[in-house]
Image (cartoon, rainbow over all chains, first blue to last red; front, side, top):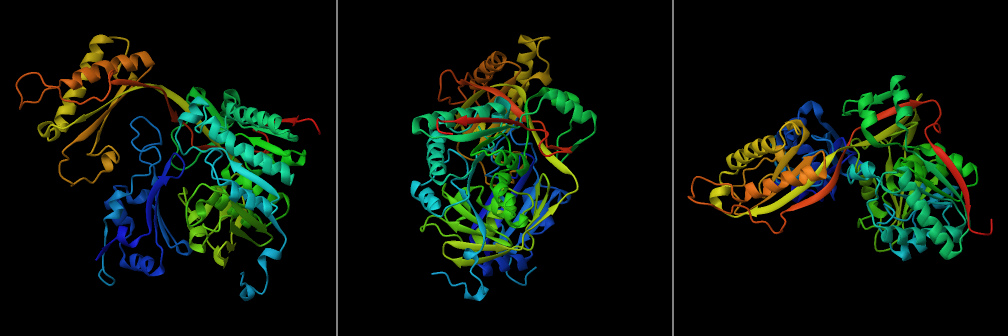
Amino acid sequence: MATLGELASLIRSKNAGPFWLTFDILFDDEASFERVISSGLITYQSVSEMLGFRQEDILLKVLRPALAIKISVPRPMVQGNLGESDMYAGQQYAPLVTMTVPDIGAR
Amino acid sequence: MKDTHFLERDPLAERRVRVLSPTGVLGAGFKETSLQRGVEKLPHVIACDGGSTDSGPHYLGSGQPKLSREATRRDLRLIMLARDVLDVPLLIGSCGTAGTDAGVRWIRDLCLEIAEEEDLSFRLACIYSQQQTEDLVDYWRAGVITPLPAAPPLSEQVLRRCEHVVGMMGHEPLGAALEQGADIILAGRATDTSLFAAVPLRNGMHPGASWHAAKIIECGAACAENAWADSILAHVGEQDFIIESLDPDNPVTPRGVAAHTLYENADPLLLQEPGGTLDTSLAEYLQLDSNCVLVSGSQFNESTTYTVKLEGASLSGFQTVVIGGIRDPYIIRQLDSWLGAMQQQFAERVELLYAGRLSPNDYDIDIKVYGRDAVMGAFEPGGNGLPHEVGILFTVTAPSQEQARNIAKFVSHAGAHFPIPEWKGIISSIAYPFSPAEVDRGAHYQFALNHVVTVQDPLELFRFEFSLAGEKI
């Protein structure tokens, strides 16, 4: 079994403006991309459990030409408000890196 | 060699508007060789983004730019010299990072300084985007200011409390300045894309292609295989567009260009502009050669109303910080209770020293524990065991710098000797690298608006100023 970090070419998080937080999972090759898509790993529920957001807040998009999965949520705190810990929201994706990708067929 | 026989046409031979993007943000830098290669392609326009909200509310709140004068000047000078050689329009937007009036003037002054040194002459247009409070209140009372998703609550009071509010212009004000013969346009806050889409749209190029190309090149060469700060070129046509790399060591690929469409957006398929929506859901990306990617299928759907996004920032207070480290395993294993008791003592001390002058709502003492959960806060899944060392960051926010500093003084002092039950006698519990341990941070601002105002005229929120620079006009 592999982790998402091992299969992805890039996992990142960033502000999408001051009020939204977005995560990108990108792949270099179709095989890795298809493996993760067909594994059923990334769902509204799994994202909710792994990152701690409510399912109804999650926007989940697959962009095939980019071999990318995108997860977006309203930013838990408006960027720069008192208590800000990550101005660029660049270090919020860590739990995704070690997610285990189930083998194909094992849902 | 290009091998596009499968297309039954040569896309690069068609009528296209060439847009040169020197770098992702003015001041980030670029290779002179890349810019020069871009100039040799004879672009019809040079456009560069001067800022964004990405670095936080400080720049909109204070009106100060994020990047240095030296870095900004270096880029601006080379770009102005290129413009002069080509004699094409140069558009720079979101000047001074936040696009305030002060930001536009800052770039204008740099621009005129360079013009004099290099003996350049041109028609200059400045387009200001800052909004007057009373005008905003009028729009608010008229009911035409509406929230975007995840907007904070808005009221007249919130509008009045903003230090600066800017409206994000679309391509229309830029087009109006071009219509007046402007060679260099320095704009306040503008959508990143409008700077790059303005000239293609003005020349009747495909709107979907114009806006999507703009989205790809607004970060410069970030869409290429190596995300260096560098120049890039778009050829915008009547049905599609081409992205061309200007550095042979940095190719562009269909996947890379498609991936950049989703950078910093919540929704990569539907991208809002003031006058409509860019729909990239049917876009197709094709490698023409190692330097070029052809993109087709993007559509721009005009909306019936025209909405201008407002950005505003208000002052939340002044800050002083204290940073230190902890190495004692006994303290590290009881941080929650230890820090909780410390916060309790801080509250009592403020009450004692500032009785009647500061209520609990007036100030804030934030504590972050690096090595445990400082970066992710409540979202930290944890489960990694105890670290052998942690960093502690106290951030004090109060109505004045003096109050913040004075509160920070007893934070650092109390924190330094805060006891744990295991040790009998006075301890020094926090390792401070500095004396004084307190460091003033200055003013702290917060974003206050995520709203749009519906207007009748795309130009009505913006002010124009035309002038001539240099001798020979």
